Length: 322
Image 1 (cartoon, helix red, strand yellow):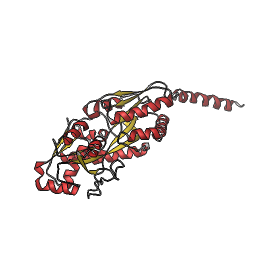
Image 2 (cartoon, rainbow, N blue to C red):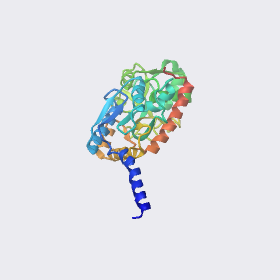
Image 3 (spheres, one colour):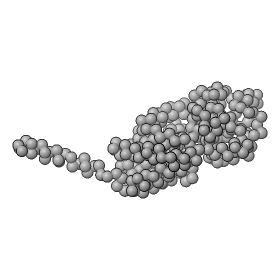
Image 4 (tube, rainbow, N blue to C red):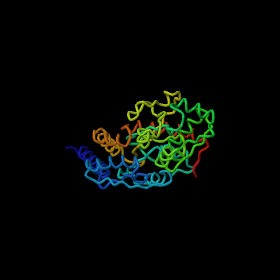
């Protein structure tokens, strides 16, 4: 071996050492999955399903850390400042794309603070009316509201949730003079319309299905791009004459910005395999969600689209949370 070749060999070994040191086996310790909501909600349940499977595959515990408060901002802000080594994963709902416009100061940037992994699953919103409301379709409801809208309120799960913004978008598009009544979550909103405290509501689909099946509520339209397999007889908003009203509640996963690309690829690949498993798909469907399993690139594009879309609605309606 010539002196030059020996020098090149030593140099190549020396430069390889830092690369090897910076890329240990992943995960090398328990992984924290931050859920910015209280336990028991759909985001939490789906995160736990995925986390349990990741624990089995990786041989490292995935620990769900519920950090509720401020519409998800507390948990999302915490995740934004976590060490970007792949040992922190953030599970989000649609508040991720809404809060940067809704709040005067959101503790994260939806485009720069995180790297998208996947929109794991999503459930559409649905417009419902109490069985006593004399409207059998969305067209009949609109005619009723235009005739005497001041007698009617529309309940939603909370200020700035996608059902709340869907109700506002519907109001603006149909030029309706009705009052939105935001409750403190999906449960109270569904209870209010089922108990006829408010005659109509817009909520995420899963919690209202039992009331629809029992005849207490009438489903008028879903905000999906196609009919829901859960309620195949209920038309979409586009089918009743309102295009561009598509909206859902997503269940997505992200990691802090700066997480190494090989780790991002590994997390994404494992989660894609998990979401393809029949038992996981069945359990997610049991939550009223459809598996989406988008790629990081697809989820990034969805985030860009929805931040802009809901930002326009929030600004047009003058909705603000400080």
